[in-house]
Image (tube, rainbow, N blue to C red; front, side, top):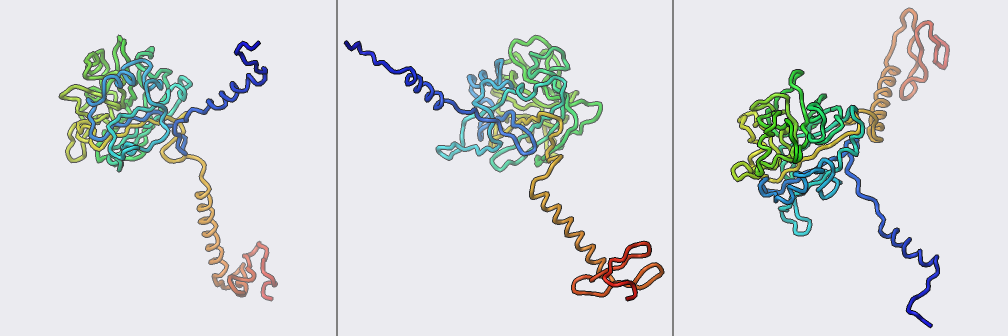
Length: 366
């Protein structure tokens, strides 16, 4: 008698499961890596004309004001798979109003405490990439990516060296670092911290206030930046707040990053990056290199085209030099022979000075 239950052979019963796994399995997207070995670690996009106070509180809390946050790969939309940005809505073609935050967990690349790595801070304004700045440094990994986790004050930042400006179209009069003024990438701060912290306040600060850490509208949690080791009105040699997320009514009409220095001709604090309310839209990116060898341009190895070009130029130069030498008339002097007779292009033979072997087809004087 039928009970309404269908008996399926064991082998067939496993088939849908196997097929299901095959259908559902797929590789996670990889973060973008350029041909010089730089991995795009974090990418932040401020939409056109949207000041920092337009970033809603829920998104701010999810991405920045929590632990883990963006630098540990949490709260973001995914890993950054492209360094390009159009600022357009893909469906409508109009300027997007959506903020975008992508990041890997930096700890997946920074795996060894005490090892040297490279970091780049890279930003620009608008689809035409105006006011672009790209700067790289070497640092020794402290073993931590937030100031909360760090065990000593020295571990609350990455101390930077070997500064290399990759690109600068900003016109900003940047400060010049020196041996007595150390450079730092200060790490994000998360809620619950109870110690002195580094920030870009007034160019550089290390105190418990954290540049208004307790203020909900200042939104200091989750921010970061690159600073010197002492304050100053025009002391920046990179963006000292990047990202910056201020939401106060008076000060929240900010760009997503802040540079205290102005242009060469005006020197106005924040005149280039800071107080333009996201005009044209802004892209901020951090790149990491898994060793201290990455530079803005390749330091070793050449692509096929470059190899061909080098060989072509060297070979061509050698051909011209040898051809000129062989065709140059010579007169008999002591210890030398007359040049060999001409035969089409170049000589059919040539003679060498004394102690050399004649390469002519006939004996000297023959």
